[in-house]
Amino acid sequence: MPFIFKRTDIEGLVLIEPQVFKDERGYFFENFKKSDFLNNGIDVDFVQENCSKSAKDVIRGLHFQRAPYAQGKIITCTKGEILDCAVDLRKDSKTFKNYLLFNLNEENKHSLFIPKGFAHGFLTLSDTAEISYKITGAQYNKDSEFGIIYNDPELNINWDIDFEPILSNKDKILPKLSEIKPEDLF
Image (cartoon, rainbow, N blue to C red; front, side):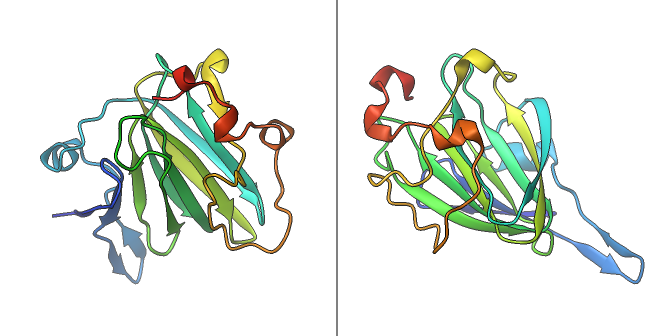
């Protein structure tokens, strides 16, 4: 089997570890195989793939798209290293407002499947990091984009930083979870 699917304490959130074949030429691994994902309960149809590059100490997020344009994601760090964060925003979930952090990097080649109903963000740990993420559900819709400030005291995410991270102007003004209308959640 080319993948190990590790279920987490938050339903639907899955860490995916590929089988990597290395030799003197380099390496090869499958990053996605629909049949293996289906056999492990992840039924996805991708509608978009995005790539980003970030400098050290950048935090992107916590982002999500509101219904009906909600998206699931598979996140992979192809170069460098990130601390990836997924926050459960499903109001009826027993883990509502819980988050998990994952170290994704070019060495471990792990991916994270984040279903619809989550906010997502990451902190760049290396000098630069390149991220690839496949999107399920709906394509990007500017009017539906939304988010939560990375340092929301209610979420109390342990980014383990003692510095002011670099944020986009848009991310600097994201609201706290308590300021978001219930209908904007899932």
